[in-house]
Image (cartoon, rainbow, N blue to C red):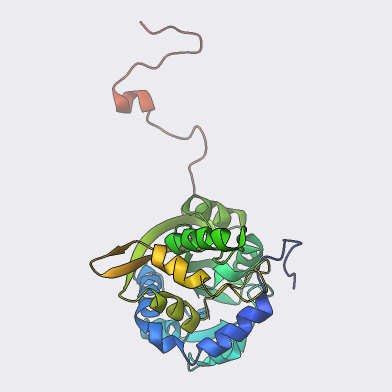
Length: 297
């Protein structure tokens, strides 16, 4: 089984595993947000009449597997970097790494990944491994934060730390852009790739609650380039005070990117062979077709 490429190591994966272990006992505090993301992922399955028998769900935090079973999926395997998180699904559980998938080729006809792929060092490589684990005509759906998520917090932390220390350490992870989503799927070998985004706005009467929620969900920074020193005492109060506040308090945006693609199969629609059309575009548009070098009359 092939693993990751020589992609740069951006994230501290052992640290992430420890944080997801701890979050298994604390993420109930942010259940509404996690449930909203899981529901949006599962809703995509209702858009197809295709029926699935063997599913792999990654990073579901115990919320996705029950939804798959409720939709008639006969066999569901739950995988997470954290063994504690994987066990929350209540069925077959695997402690595994998205960067080294421990599954045979063609093992699943459905793979869903919920709020976890933004922590892999080589996203194209991870998608390629997922694609390899899928049978023909299998469906892949993933949700992950997109560029724009926590942008206000990112800017406030950078400005506050630069003012205090004359330099800033990265404290919010980089996120993929919408325009890259379909291209990533296509590069990994998926057919019919689709990417779209939806904003989920979170409101906090107390700005500090935003940081507490990120910690409870195990979503604190796991960047290898983070400053290992203890943050200055004034950093977070200064950054949180700079966040714009409205009538409902401070708001933060989760820009949810959803990726959908199919593993290639014989029954999928394909573009027609070039030159096989029996109707001219000029006729459809009611215009005159000009030959090469012919000037319009």
